[in-house]
Length: 563
Image (cartoon, rainbow, N blue to C red):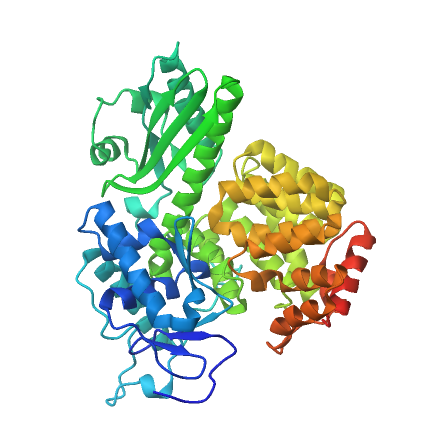
């Protein structure tokens, strides 16, 4: 198959009808192997086009030992790179992740005329792609069901208005309620004096920090400590009603503390996350708190990711409030106009079941805030006022929910009430110092409030705690370095991103301020080719800097870059 140039992207992955991978000149380079095609399909619908290696192995080689699955994955990735040829850089594998480079690969999920069957039947998601692995079969069946439903109804469901009558939620199963986790006593190695007390204290600290995440129920440590030693995770989950189980091996000496921690889905006994935490044990109390905070944050990030994936392909009409909130969060974070409206519908429906559901109320606030920020609302002032109103309702509903205070901080920041914003974010961090999103937002508020130096270490900590959101954090960190006048650091930060297109303006402005105006214009051209660029003078009006000098300097850099 040949043809004219398709897009400004290097590759186009079409996942409707027969799966096809095309070069920009129209030549098809779809890999022949089923597992290679399955890998591309799994990546093509992933958030930010990336998946963790362990997740991919579970979907394609669930019947093999982990080391065999890892070897098979490496082999398939090598085959895909060969098929890509000169475009092999469009596939990246770093830090345990596999990704398609979003700025270089376009994924198509809209059917073309030729995709429809001769009988008039609608096309299928990845038609004919069948892989004999139960995990993959379950995944692709869900994807096909959702795709067929969207074709049948002609698009996503309309949002439910705020004035909707109070509904009765669907009958809740264990999967529909907020998840719970049981942190088991740590296994101790070493002859460190009072090591058993340190191990117990560390586990209890993790439980205590997890309780601050209002979206997770942490089972009391006294209950898990009463379980018989060596009990399988499935049995622990059944006895304590826990969807997840956390367990760890603690190696303790006079100089080092090394914790290997695992997060397990209780029902399947699959390890979905594992991490080593290696620290000096000179100041044992501070190290214990640091490790506990990192474990709690990493555990919550993984559970959030798993829970959102679990409901992504479900029919929203069948979801209970907690699952509706997850579905709304997933749609909102896509940063697309229609999906933001879908998110509003899910949040409003959750509130129709429970009018004091703080998380859904703060979700409505954020969605209205995004409508204002990204100019999706016809009446922008009204959208920002709605964002504030629902943030206040969220705080009233649950004053101890850090997400509610953070929503209020976000609105105050964009109203340019910096002192009020910083106060709200400080309160949110007091409620939960391990929440990476709140930490990153507080850092962003500090930057806009005039203290970019204090913001940098907070951004770096947020990136360590939540690698899933790293690109969004890095984008704001790059802008922070720009505010500091460290344009080299800004460019280094952009280069750390998987989706560098998110920071094109800051990158181009940084190059211009360094005197590389030719390079700046080449960078800016990537954005200008999209044909829908907001003029620099308009774009900077949405930056809530307390000190106008920061905004003026960014505007100068963008203008010198040709934006």
